[in-house]
Length: 62
Length: 201
Image (cartoon, rainbow over all chains, first blue to last red; front, top):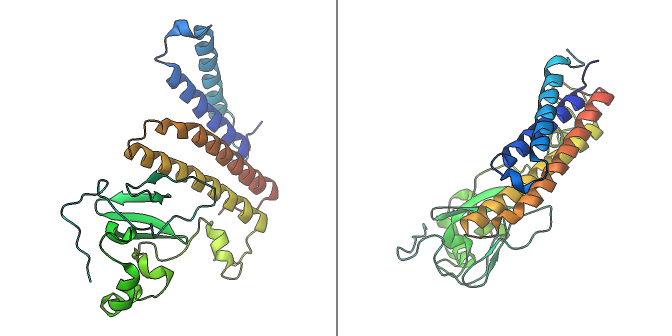
């Protein structure tokens, strides 16, 4: 199913936010955040899937 | 008459007296950005470039010498406009509130309006002759206002940093909130363009 412009924009913004969160947490002391590795893994999957959606799903007007 | 800068004083450290002649036009309530040594409060957005101050006055961007920005340092601008008017360039020979605001950098008032909104003043028609959708224009203006609000906060944060404010990171939450509002305004605009099929161009 094709992405509308709004959906594409929302996914792009969300992906950028996730990347920003990942970058912010990068130098953190892992021991200070419970389940840090799970959080990082989850963010990584979200990042990957959002960028996949942008690459694979065509725009509505394409 | 060209006002000479006092060689003993440098921007940012000089002592000034008198009232601040210009304050920015803002669509949002804001507190004073910083206070001059004499206690006068300055409201943003302003930018100090060397000996000159850039500021917004009634929707137009202006630049003037720091001595002109704060009265009582060197120049009494009312006096300047009364006595030396004939020596000023033609576009500065204005008596009244605009007589002390320096040379405008941007001549046209935009007021943060979108191009369609500005074109509305010219008969509500775009160059192609097609009427602009009023809702699209409203949403684009709201988007523009959200961006403007964000810019204002960034500018305030920058000025706080320049002023050595140790709490300058306090703007980050406000910037985040303004950014969220910007996103919502953008989505509302795009959603309308998409469902209403009115061109974004």
